Length: 295
Image (cartoon, rainbow, N blue to C red; front, side, top):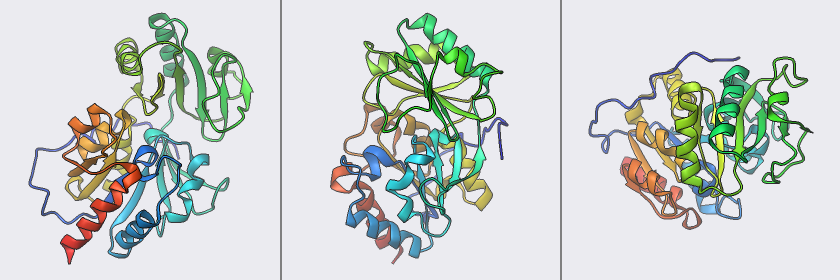
């Protein structure tokens, strides 16, 4: 199912006292947050996730990763089996395991918007190179560096990959990736947001100058808000965790939110609380405390 209607429910409501509101859903980023730097899930974190689900608290993995990279946590999705991937561009059922996932919801980046974003950012930041992330495929420009753990499905200029009559046109575009070889990552993000405006949502999760460009109003927060609304869960009942700029909207929206000890300064400013670093099981530390509060 494709869903491209504007979502405004991800705007946080007026502040309320949420510390005493029992959580019904935990939303956690993966890289730099739930996962340790070696991309493993620690035994302590596995136990905390299982305990939360046993206590009736749903756990949603909310990540910039594509669905095909979710094998690191596919054994820990528990009953509902759902994850939010691509910074909110897709809701995926992981029950089938690696390579057998099912897209429940797709919030694609229209090709017209993608082409506009490519053109505007090429003009604003010469030297930018692109890759195109689709539901199942991954294509890139020849000059795009090897940043990902896979072999691309094809090489071509972004304008060709995104053209309406492209051989890739039968598959939704989830996001485009823009890399610059020289710019500071935060400066590149600011420049891109100014250049692209409301044609797309621009964020980043990498320590390098690598931007992730999604459809207008598509973010971790807006898709999480949709999933919560379907379950009758309010933002006050959500606890969120993150470490990078692509987590900021989600952390701002959630009733309680925690920046990791290793988080980007913008994340530290956005979250309502802090925990220890990902390598020190910061998510598990908070979940254990939340469960203690319920006893």
